[in-house]
Image (cartoon, rainbow, N blue to C red):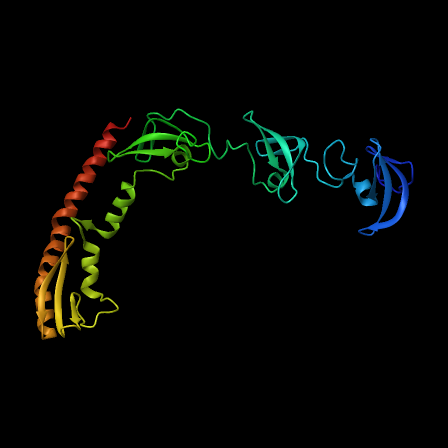
Length: 302
């Protein structure tokens, strides 16, 4: 027994939407019979049994501006967009351009392919948030001072809003609203620098981490077996040098490699003194200052 609503047989005279079946053409499309049909507008077209029964073709396209068999997106929702009707426009690859209205009230034309693939879900308000009152608000180390206009005002592409901000270190910068909201910008760059300083144990232009590494690790091109001692081919002598606080000191040229190593070893006492000062005086003082600051912040918190 056939299911309710099932079309068992197509015969001349039957109607499907705006189409009236006239005759079997004797042709086949994907193994389905192809019928000559006439649209209510008077135009003739050939439609397969599958297309008629599935309802994918119900006119010649005179109403929807779509080719027979094309997907009708009218009334469908994609994200914040509600599709209203197809336009006469086409994208480069033939995709129908649809007119839609966004939940924010703005109307726009969008490629049907981008709608179906989920690549376009708004008129642009999702990727470019509306202008909000951010004055006085804090984002990371940024504190918003005043509105700085849109991308267009700044000669840029897009519609992003921009804000003038003051960093906790005192620097002033212009930051995009989206970058503030998603946390991609949290400082003028000082936060990244401080992170690097912390990892490298950088103090007064000297990295404690590098000094400690040089105690036991040699460069791949080192031929003397001692950091800071190298062979000068031009005058066939051994050179000794040492770097400290962004300066390089030349300790001399020597005929004997062992003498060059001895001089370099003596000079390394400044490194050892600096490392000892870092751990015994500088680091404890920094930790104590941070602890006091955290305590004061806790007391003033509501």
